[in-house]
Amino acid sequence: MTARSIRGVAATAMAGVLAAGAAACSTPGSGDGDGAAGGKDSLVVGLANEPETLSPLLGYGKDGNSKIFDGLLSRDAGMKLRPALAAELPKITDDGRTYTFKLRQGVKFSDGKPFGAKDVVFTYRTILDEKTNNAAKGELDAIDKVTAENDDTVVFRLKYPYAPFAERTVLPVVPEHAAKGQDVNTGSFNTAPIGTGPYVLTGWSKGEKLTFKANPGYWGGEPEVKKLTMAIIKDDDVRATRLRSGDLDGAILPPNLVKGFKGDKNKRTITARTTDFRGVTLPTANKVTGDTAVRRALDLAVDRKAMVDKLLEGAGRAGYGPVPTDSEWFTKGTERPHDVDKARKLLDDAGWKPGDGGVREKDGQRAAFTLWFPAGDKLREEHALAFASDAKKTGIEVKVQSGTWEVIEPRMKDDAVLAGGGNPADPDFDLYNLLHSSLALDGFNNMAAYANPDVDKALEEGRRSGDKAARKAAYDKVQRGLADNPGYVFLTHVDHLYVMNDAWQDVTTQVEPHDHGLGAGPWWNVEDWQRKK
Image (cartoon, rainbow, N blue to C red; front, side, top):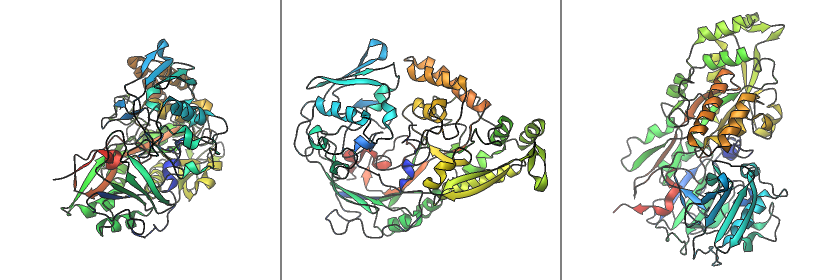
């Protein structure tokens, strides 16, 4: 996770979720011709968050499915890479240091201007420019230079062999003619974008909704869903109410509200598997959470199964690291049991003895620390309280507090945080930025300031090797190192639940990241939907 995707671990996906508040209550289809829910050729969906910008130059759509734009590559339902603006998958040469893309011919931007290699070069060079305020630019650190060999060929030369580089090229491409010449950080392109994608933005009422119309000139064919509205509704209960009233065609909902739709024959519930984790940071600088015995004890004390059963109502899995247990990259044998007795013995043996009020002490230091969660995020609050309850059984006091990220971020060096994150594209995307010591407290990267030389070395091996078996061995080392010295206590991986009208056929989901925004959900490929006959 990069600085932006650990807003994956912390903030990006939470832009609309972390602050509680009344949702905008106007009808998404009112006033601007975007259609009401249930319309034959329209779709209105309810989301909990909205993007900060619509410019890929500043990070929008970097993981694909941006609707307004396309990347060189995209991912299918099985998360396999496929050509998009590229005519074919890249040719990889020079021992993994050179990627050559042949571009699709005849593609036009929604303003009618032709797409070409210069647009690709402009996009990547602008993102990498030091003046561009893109917190995710570190994800492209491997790029040495990008050049246009001719109008339909783009060549990326890397500083080092970066195994998952092709996965990064789902990043949307912007038109040089529309975005050049204005301030990349504040210009009009950020709110009035032009792309090659299946939809064209028709309106954006901040905090309320984004509206789109089908792009008739889309190279993949004009979508059957002609009007698309993404209603921004932060409150879960309001979202469910508006779905029940017919104001929405679909919405993301927590498990406790999904149950209310099980008897509705006109609705279907769709479960998306994810890499979306919840976990507690254990700051290395804190005298309590920096103690390896305390870390190991907390890792054993948490009852992950109870959290899945009670907090997620079964819609998720126990988490032992960023890599989910059902991933091919998960290291079997690193599952940690729920064993309170063993946790207590670890603390006893390390000199943490019971003190006043049952809270342990060592050398005058009480086994107590503060755990923050973002205000308004009920699921994180529930995880934090469950974690504190489990810790108390071992004699460790965890004081749970809520606040905005502006309040939390300065305290991350010493206080724990109920974090979230996850990206299914490649293990490097999560593990490196979460654990590498060079990124300690770099924005929202490595929030625990975790430092383990063996893990650092394995992380480097994993991202630079082109051999999958060698990469698997490297990430096995990382996960074993994390189990031996937990800089985080991972709790669960959270499934995303959606309820929607049963009017469209062949609706699918991808394995979803932490950021369940505009590009995720059953509508990840709405441009391909066909209405049921």
